[in-house]
Amino acid sequence: MRRKLLTALIGSVLFVSAALPAFADYAAGVVAYAAGNYEKAAREFKSDETAGSYFILSQMYGSGIGLNQDKKTALTYLHRAAELGLDVAQADLGLLYLEGAGVHANEAEGLRWLRKAAAQGLPEAETIVRAFTQVEVASR
Image 1 (cartoon, rainbow, N blue to C red):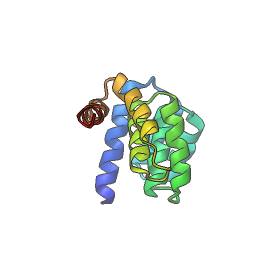
Image 2 (image 1 turned 180 degrees about the vertical axis):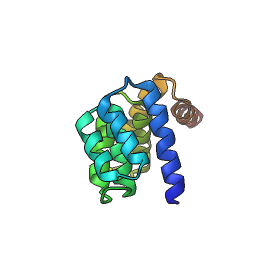
Image 3 (image 1 turned 45 degrees about the vertical axis):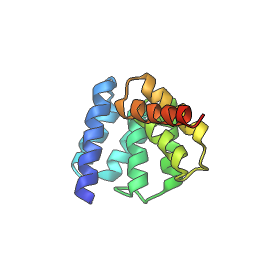
Image 4 (image 1 turned 120 degrees about the vertical axis):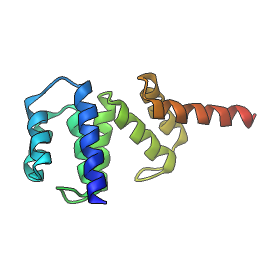
């Protein structure tokens, strides 16, 4: 489980880093994380204040890897990343609202975030938005 999460996190780090300009704190955080120095990684990501760093912090707090698991703090960082326009954060936040996971279920809010991610071309978000649109049309 931990290995899967680490692989997914590193994959998202690489994906996010390809979409963002290089920042020293972000790069230092990635290096520290890969080395297993989670305390330093968290410190670097917190000082970076970019969408990518906020997204990784949300994953670290949400999973409890390197930090005490804290779903509320994870949600705060996820919101910050989504507000800064990171498509994967917007999609994750949208799904949380659709599912009511850690937030009050709110289909309109969930679809709003998913549409933002879809507008940036995130295929998974496009698929979910399309599915909800088809269900709405079919139910009329």
